[in-house]
Image (cartoon, rainbow, N blue to C red; front, top):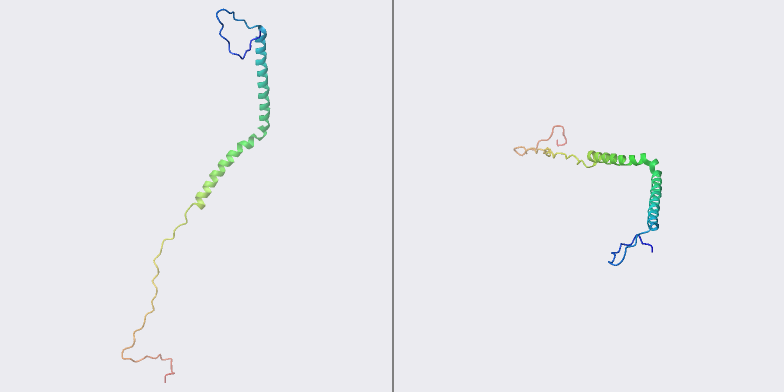
Length: 122
């Protein structure tokens, strides 16, 4: 009778002898372990080959974060120096006093003074 290596061991009852595992089952278990390890190793090699394809883009992958970081710094500098700065406020100035035309007072005595260059009144 072959023992299943994946089955939990049963507690022997007092009147029974425990059967020893024969060398075939141990050998079979070791072969399964070896095959599993070979399969995992093969999968790991394939994954490393797939990663090797991206090695030619290593320089670009290093430059992209530097370019992004530089762009953030440049844009923040640009925004601080131009767009976010408030426009300077022109201080209010007092309105200039207007020249009010002076009215000449009427001559005393009720006579009208005619300019000398006007001879039409004669």
